[in-house]
Length: 481
Image 1 (tube, helix red, strand yellow):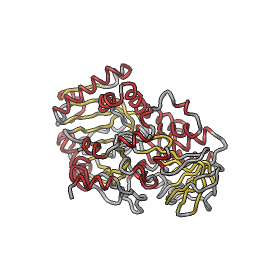
Image 2: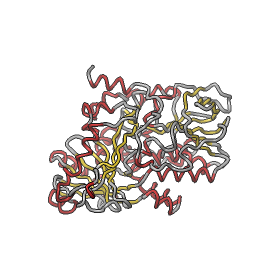
Image 3: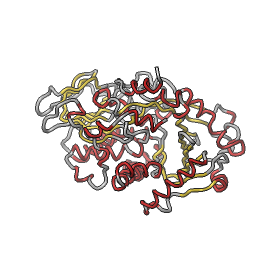
Image 4: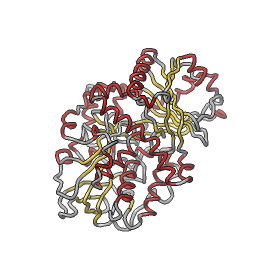
């Protein structure tokens, strides 16, 4: 079969439930001692809100709901262990390079809408830093959350000229960002950042952290503060949803442990959304990504406290952070080097296997880019790759998240007054600059406080029938390969 046709068919398939035997993510070792397998002795029979998914988005929704209404009863349902999906498997980067997409977004949606979306993404760095500080110094220390200078090294001359033009256009329309972003030509890039193979470097502000630790600590705090109103149920996959409940609790959320009646259902399952929302299959679909932890070379400086990195090629990119504590390097990407130019990872919903060609690319990347003088031997002659795992991301055909109340045409179920289905998903590989504020916005919508988000939430992200009708996976593939 033609690879593109085969990929399109796979992107329209039911993603199913998360795999029971995922690759082991370094971030989740050791697992949180009290949350990993947490369950109530008996499931509650009814709740106000059932949140499906225990990652950063679901946590943000729950945090907003519980702090905004003291009477709400909320349950969070997780198919595997707590925070075991994309939040516990990603690159540890709070990174938005706003100029990459701004010009295209402005052309498609107008400058005002594009600027709102870019500012929304940029807000996540400070929102997450603020939230971590609210949790306390222990959470800040354990999660290693920090603001860093991010360094995007470019390795193709034509791509470098294009990116500089995008940066200039972005800064023209965002005067408040002037002075935060800088372009350095080859000689300056080599002297300042030690990457001799780069033709240029763009720098700006980003964040780095241990996402699993931040979110599990947040969930632990919610459970402690709202013992009678909030529960987290791991190993409790949602098998189906029906609207055969009572008028007050219209939704029946059917799990492997029993049925829960709910007023509202919130889908925070990202790449797995299509399992319970079949009308969105092909519009939102999974993609497998590849991550590694590596030993730095003996000549590589200890820069994790102040820098993070991106590597941009003629086609594709990779991303890297470094622990400020252990000096371990977290390197992910390699999509463009996967089978069939990455097509074989599109539509894949199982994280049981590694993406082998992407892993091979990541294995040899750093000594090649930095060269012997700036890299040296692997530390103490240890194996370069200490751990490797895959993770499932959620993408959308139009390249943007879907956040808001689901119309009946999208949910496939008729909502009665007083309750609804909601979605925050399809973060397109950039969850750390989409998820927290999306969850916050969705929580305010459920509380009926949509006016509270009117000034900052992008209307582009609302789920509508019109978006569904415009979305085509063929367009996504054309942009991707």
